[in-house]
Amino acid sequence: MKSPFVLHIDIDAFFAAVEVMLNPHLKGKPVIVGGMPDERGVVSTASYEARKYGVHSGMALRTAGQKCPHGIFVRGRYHVYSRISEKFMDCLRRFSPKVEAVSIDEAYIDLSGSRYLHSSVYALAEKIKQTVERETGLRVSAGLGFSRLGAKLATEAAKPGGFFFVGDERSFISDLSLEKIPGIGNHTLLILQAMGIKRVKELERSYPSIWKRTIAPHFYSRSRYPDRREPKTKSFSRETTFPEDLSDRDMIVSHLAYLVDRLSVYLIEHGYFAGRIEVKVRFSDFTTYTKRTSLPYPTYSYGNLWDTGLLLLDQLLKKRKLPLRLVGVKVEDIAKQRDILPFISIRSEQLSRGVSDVKKRFGFSSIFTARELMLEKIYPVERDSIVLKTASLTK
Ligand code: DCP
Ligand code: MG
Image (cartoon, rainbow, N blue to C red; front, top):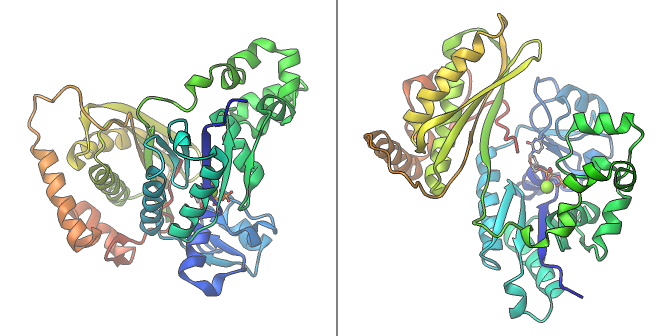
């Protein structure tokens, strides 16, 4: 039999597990990360103890407070999680040059080359799992498969803490209900469910053409999985819900400036260029709008991201005459290099680099633009961050 070669690893209850690691008194307790139960905003994640009460990522904090009144609520420290995530990815990269980070706590590792150096791919996968757990101090779940989809679903089945290998991916996946399949959107799911289609095999039987386009490629074009091109992460984003809805444009702008600053420094530290930028707003009535555009050229510069981001924000603010609840920014078309060198001045990039060096030495908060400094009025400022209410990341 051909060896499986895609390993998928995902950290269990990531943000909550980090909080428990840094404060062992929390061990075994229902920990809920994202904010206080009387605050607006949503749960980033919850420890497995809290999940028993029905608390999950994306749930309103107030609902979480009702479901789990004795829960221990913590705000969350994004920069700490981000540092641990880097350690996690670095550790994986020691085992294979082909590591595709798909979110802050999750990656695919292509073992097709490395397996020849080891007696068995299963032993190698087990060793990788143990090594990351030892080095990060966190528990992970792992899945081994012939395709990314197979590996990811194996991890889901192995949670928490296990390691699964799905031998017959095709029949395993056929038995699954459609909502388990990543990439099938809610809208499609509702339509299919209304047509009485709940499982993958029903889709195959009743609508082979849809099955062929969506599910089949995972089995037939094995060589496409994992992607053999350079590992590519599609986007990075930062967003925040305000402690109270905001009408003051200057204050909204300050939040956006801070989030853009964090993204710019992140791009610089990782040697990335971004080709597009998207801004997102949510009004007090929960209507949400996004607007995106290509940047004049791929860049990491705060100034360039900011100029374009602000234009998008102003267009979005015209959509409704209501106070704002949330603002977010995302960069996409991420690349490690830039094919066409811009003919324009790169002074703005040099400036961003300089600022990022200062931040690295003296802390993220050691240097801010005046716009960002307005946030001091409403949030505590620590060495490495302004403590926003919910500095959460979207995947
Ligand atoms: N996250 C978030 N908001 C969401 C989903 C996730 O802020 N709506 C953050 C918090 C999570 C982290 O991303 O800790 C990783 O997401 P996962 O989906 O992997 O969830 P967990 O790691 O928390 O739990 P699991 O054990 O199910 O992987
Ligand atoms: Mg996880």
